[in-house]
Amino acid sequence: MRPKARLQSTLLAALWLLASSCATTTNPVTGERELVGISTQQEIAMGTKAAEQVQQQMGLVDDPALRGYIRQLGARLAPYSPRRDLPYSFDVVLMPEPNAFALPGGHIYVSRGLLAITNSEAELAGVIGHEIGHVAARHHAQRQTRSQAVGAATVLGTLAAAVLGGGQAAQAVNELGQVAGSGLIASYGRDQERQSDDVGQRIAAKAGYDPAGISVFLDTLGRASELETGQKRQPSFFDSHPSTPERVRDTKTRAASLRAAAMPAIAASPAIAGSRRAFYEHLRGLLVGPDPASGIFVGQRFLHPDLDLAIDFPSGWKTVNAQSSVGAQHPQGTGFVRLQSQGAGSDVRAAANAFANQAKLALQQSQEIRIAGRPAWRALAQTQDGTAVQFTWIARGGSIYRVEGVAKSAGFNALAASFDRVARSVRGLQSSERNGIRERRLEVATARAGETLVQLGKRTGNAWGPKETAIANGVPLNVRFRAGDPVKIAKERPYRGR
Image: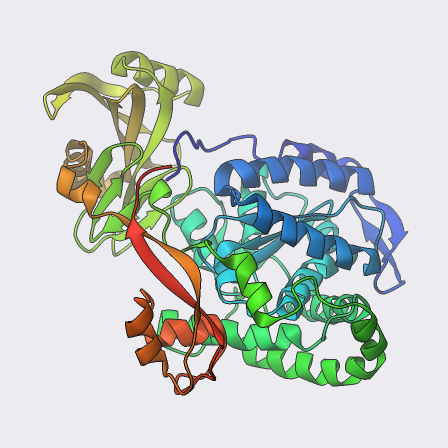
């Protein structure tokens, strides 16, 4: 949960344009005529709104040098897009999972988690080229034309779920109710993904990059997913992409046919980062893993050092830390509880009334209670669909926090005590808790001749284990490095606040 982040009910207000008209236009990738429900100007308007929400809800990496490098690389690729009527832009989101996605209007994003497992400029060019491919082929417009009834609050989550890897980010957004309709996680059809792989490889090759870069990255991505889940990634009905092994095979085959034609461009256009070490240097200092500035979980306890906030969630419940809230879901999915900021203030009763008026809710059993010796406000509400909600407003540090316990009315009483315990656990951090919070940053080590991952890890104080390090560097687990090889490692240090 990021400080001052709030769920926006008007997430993509520009969607009002979607149903206004349909027109036949030529697809820049296929050259075929197709019926689309939005114009280029509407696409740009949608993308501008969505980009504002990405910055607010997900956050952008604050390293000007790294963001400048990504923009420079994007600017090198964009002129080779089959579609050039958009102002393409490129940036890095704070998402820890390996992710990349495109918004309407040409906004392209890669995540810090993706950069951490990328090992060459050619790999990154393949990823960015793939996302340019989605924009060039008007996949957003095709999807919206087929489903114009999608609500505005759904779309950002859907777009953010259009990732090159697994659905962790989509799951985090969806589980706390910020995305309606889990089926929309499958945001692109598999044929669209295959088409974007094709377009992206051709863009990368024309810009002077090895078109096999995306194949190498996808192989690394598959290893990362296997490490996280404990099993090889399999396609499912809601999988937004073809299975990784299939994509690796297909992109390798395509690269072989593209490479010969690309060689003159590759020879004439050296990479911005011309070596593995030079590429790694662009990533030095990158935050890897959980961001303490968004709070961290220690078991079922959530600690937010910058907000001086701690809260305990029930044992066995599945916890989720989203950008605008933090919470947990019952193991059987019968209810969930979350905490989010309602903004500045100290009057809990006024905060309750203001929220009720804005949400058009009739509060029941509204009363003052005490939490940790401080006044708080408790109320219940019933929604038209038979859902019961227990609200608790708590004032801390000049801000109002709202704890919501949600369950179907028939099962609410069974969870009410758990909701109450969560709300009453809200407090400030203890010194030992604050001092124990650490962050990890990417650093670049230099290997010795014949050194193994275990040996290098011990010598350099690498916070990653051998498997994580092997995946991050795209090397086998039994690798023996050559003298002077650059190796990405993670260095852990106390978190001092941001």
